[in-house]
Length: 283
Image (tube, rainbow, N blue to C red):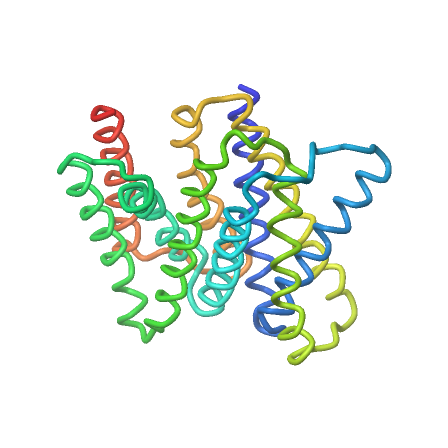
């Protein structure tokens, strides 16, 4: 049960992170928000290792290029999802995110040379069809196609991160994970953030810093979850993220998903479950 509880905690923290980011997106540029997230994460890591030397494992790596590519993927995911959530509800953004397993399978074919049966690709197509169905109400109401494009960009970047994680699965340690994702991201974003800096007002410093705390807590819970349970056991729990998103949309913005969006969500979940089942049967 420990792995499942940690997985649910991670998803809850990430949902709070996305809700907080969506609230900040109307007042602050994306590069500033994501830069401060990285800086807070680095600060927390340094403070923890000052109190407990060596906490989180080693910082070095034998695969710096892969870690840098992973950092680029994480930055693309953060930027894309932030820009998408400026205009679309959390639930719709999460539906696009649920296509990440399909993209991961595709990247595994291209990058890792895995061969997948036709049934996997069929169910991937069904899942993408569900996303298109879920997008229709928003587009008919004048929603931005560009916002959904940002969501797909974020999801592809996340799928790239998951693919690289498989290559780096023997390099355990939360400290390495945070350092090699946050430091390169902060260095790249700093010039853009300074150029477009908006001085935070009042308690906004607290909410901007909270992003780093939530991101760090979610990352640690996720890493610990996979130490205590198998991927097969934890994968179905990812769909609980949609519940968090629906609750946040209603509680903060008073928005409920349209019936067509819910139907699309059901199709996406079906496509994910069946494609993963076909993949495991093939393996």
